Length: 182
Ligand SMILES: [Zn+2]
Image (cartoon, rainbow, N blue to C red):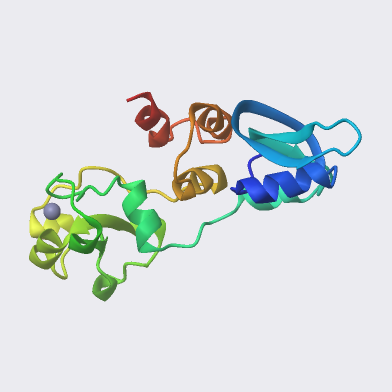
């Protein structure tokens, strides 16, 4: 199951420590090491897109099923593709804000299911009202990413192999499935 992103140094270390159970996907990069004194050959190490490490934690899978990722603006905006979910336009980070669909002043909570990306203009206009009260249409239903979706959202350059792997762990109705098709 997907656990976390590693950089190539971390992967190289796990391989050299014989901690890798299996590897698959595209080779991302080939590292060149020292020259072997006997053979005169330079050591090489291929860094695969995905590795499975040795060791097991029986309870891990159960824990991840109920995992709620921490809520922060960079991940929230990425969930919503930097799109204001009211006016439907894409904005740069500094023009975006976290809108509480049901305002905190009306009992709304600061949770994934009650927050959307909104441009500051729409957020100001909506003020302390629900979309219904403000007569504003919400373009998508906010949702909490599961652990695999959260890993996806944290990825900087997710390649096809990795996305295929992660998608095995996305909920069936995950909007991120379609996103990758485009
Ligand atoms: Zn807007």
